Image 1 (cartoon, helix red, strand yellow):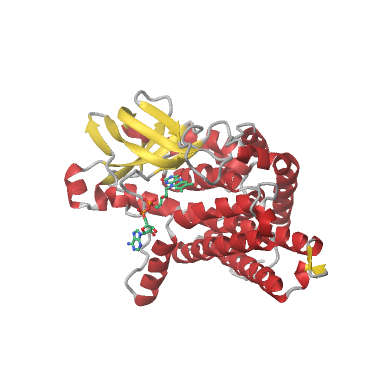
Image 2: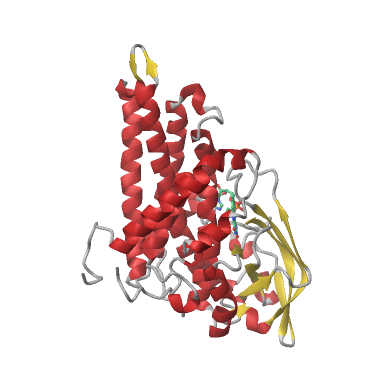
Length: 406
Ligand SMILES: Cc1cc2nc3c(=O)[nH]c(=O)nc-3n(C[C@H](O)[C@H](O)[C@H](O)COP(=O)(O)OP(=O)(O)OC[C@H]3O[C@@H](n4cnc5c(N)ncnc54)[C@H](O)[C@@H]3O)c2cc1C
């Protein structure tokens, strides 16, 4: 079928991938996730298994070590992983989407060979470092600097709230390379760099006070006059802000699809519970107010899924999708918060106990309403598109379209 034709059917490869991830996560992770979450434990042993399934380079072309699948497969994998736990999907978001697909779009051939290939094969793990304690939504507020010294940059600063901070081998870091532009908050003074854990001056730590996504790793990355060779600058000097924003198009996509999986998990747990819990002589599913919550979950699930699928389709055909991806992310994450709150409600006091998974869904969903553009930032973006205050200009480098459509 020509790529431009619309179809609501998944292709064979897409269906097989979704089924494989679903079965793997149900078998290898679901039975242990409650205990991992309670122990605040990130299980590194899952990474080689995800690599063996091709997930760590799922939409990276085969020539760069990936599985060569389309971007809908990346979304399907995200949805299936977050159906079991958000921490699994976060790995895809930072390693595969925010980091590896950014190297695919913006990296030099040498960077692709040195970093993208081992990442796509899962031999090394990578993440994305933009946020600092002083700056999240307002990315121009970062303080990290990159001072040029001959053929190197000296990076100094501290990144906060970085997923996989204590796990990753490589970090895609954003810093001001033009101090005068930093003072004027002109984003064309920012550059992007690949920083290896082994570079002198790099140290990381884990945030232990986090109350959600407890089976995931989140922390800080400290850079103390870290010498980064010029060949590790991604894109041109001054392109860092654009690169960060373009990376978010892929990260937000996985967050949207993942939150869709979380809504489905809430729906399925709620339906199962509503069929066994009885009050006033009937299954609680017979009560109209419980039905209302379950129906809302189904409506949110179906709508969220269509929105991320549309974004994936746009990526496949190589069309700019910042607006559609942002809408998918905003809708799915806001709806996942509603679904998780109602799933707890349907479970009554049992929902308030760790013996049931819905409490974990409730804690996990909130992060995604905050990271990769808060609910408020996405709301503003959608209004600005409509009001004509915001338009997307084409970037020098874009995510490559998928040539072989499934
Ligand atoms: C679990 C987790 C994992 C994360 N992983 C990563 C990662 O891997 N890499 C990374 O770089 N970052 C990561 N982050 C950081 C995340 O991207 C930021 O937290 C996010 O961008 C929000 O920034 P902030 O926390 O500084 O909130 P702020 O920007 O300080 O926002 C605070 C509040 O003010 C609102 N607000 C801000 N500006 C406006 C405005 N103009 N109009 C209306 N309301 C506004 C916000 O919506 C929010 O409600 C992670 C965060 C979490 C919680």
